[in-house]
Length: 262
Image (tube, rainbow, N blue to C red):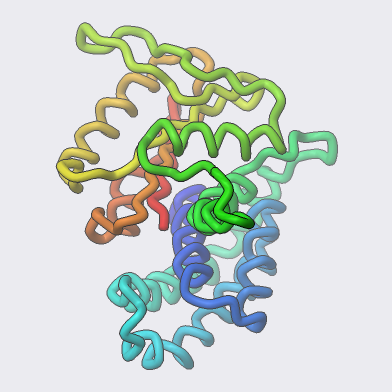
């Protein structure tokens, strides 16, 4: 049985990948239902949605692979055995998953900010960037050219769900240095670290940066969950879903979730 938080991370990656490919209502409705089920920790709907996604992939994978405009065909191919594996795991360990998901259900008074909501925000981030460029009469807008632009836009979007957002917090010293946290959500005990890929920042360099960040944030008293959002509009990162899976983890000290989008 895999850690349920890791299962959610994998499903968020699959949701983002399909959502980037199509707006077909048949599957987008399933993706929305899955996102909601993940948020509500609903075992039955999670399992049902996964089976529907697997059916959709079996029906559409040939069209995806033959489409010259699809840049991440390998990711779609990898999603098929991934979703099949998740289904088998959920079914083989259904009693354990039911108990764990039940224990994670929060009362109605809990904060609206949750993993599914944040995952959806990251999944739609690139669409928002594109939409901002399309303004009437070529009026000025925010164009996301660097890491600071990513921070500014994400900060504005987070304001819809969270009032207490603390930028430019600093982690305790690690190996003689300190690191600026992009956003500290103190009430939720979440740190959101943002990065934007660029020339010279490939898989190895990005992995090294994130590994150092994870080690630093493990020591922070107000951080129980570290979310690393990497905006990669030029698709510089090879095998982004594998990269996410390698660095996302849950320990007694810290939960780490990595999103690479689009």
